[in-house]
Length: 449
Image (cartoon, rainbow, N blue to C red; front, side, top):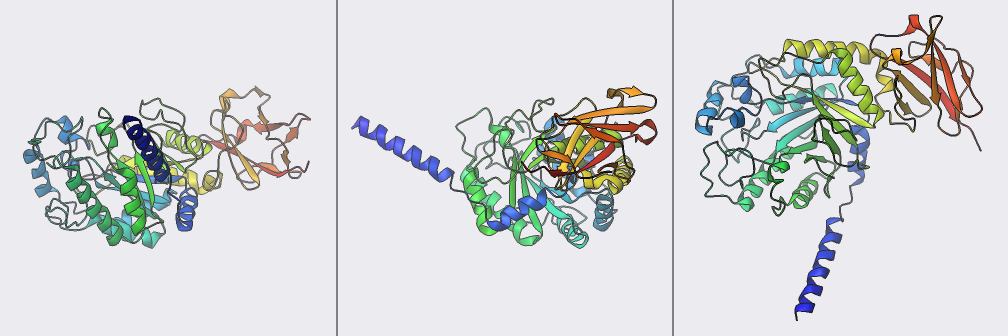
């Protein structure tokens, strides 16, 4: 009998494993994945009542105050200077193709109208407007894709099974009920999908809250199946810092490029799903008044280019202020990005990685018929008589298509040669080197064997 039970358990396990591998993305979902990769720059917005404190999005966790005190901020959250059209215009001018807004962060406050809780921006603040809806409409009018972040952990709800964070927020912990909480999340995502028809992706976060409890079952495949049953084309990603789960449509890496783990959050392997790196303009995700060390435009462009060279998008974060404005430093960086993108977007948008490994001088991207050489550090190139020499190992069978096939994006032709063993040598005058990124276009054809 014991042997039969073990056999039955094995069969059920195998059956469950097979079922877990049953997700087949719809044709519309696959098209959404392809569209997602056409615009390499996205804008991330961490915005909530925590911006009232101007101490970052984890203030409820880091401050030591309980939720009864923290939630008073909702009574003072009145972003009267918020203008969705102005925000979206700034994002579009920067060259972004999509926007991801925090619809609900770990503090449990919803930035949209919801029937599941009155702790939301419409019912609990003097502002009384659905900023999520206004931003969704502005994105639709401007042709930007609209995504929403949603936290699967909650620091205030009594039904949420407590994990390793949010332990000092005043919860009693005597009504933990994941079935109840799971249904709450289903209600909210159903509302998001219904209320914002142009919502094309859901960005989940928080599973790591139970990383010390491997037996805890988040039921994510079931959750994803529910979402796809409502809107099959909706892309799903989850910032859980591990390999993608069944039902996910893109993979993200926090504060690191795919394959890197400098921040200690992205050691997972790289899947074949569309990829995205999220990073902040400064240090914090939510607005922090003392966090004024913003990355330079050059640093941000290099991050975008290196992401594209790894076949990934860059989701670049801004923490809006409590009055509804974007920080001046963020607007300045957006303008700088826009200047660069207007002359160089062809070398990142709609491109993929190449087989050419990263070089000391920079990285490469490609689209159909072109390889783009991004010279990020010209000092790494040999220099003689005012000329840099750039040597690149071309992929097998690839040769420049014609005389003059190697040029700057501005159109100036560059001298080049190709050796018999497939190395391209480009001569780059010092006078034509750009401060941020000198992009060299190589128009090619695949040589027939």
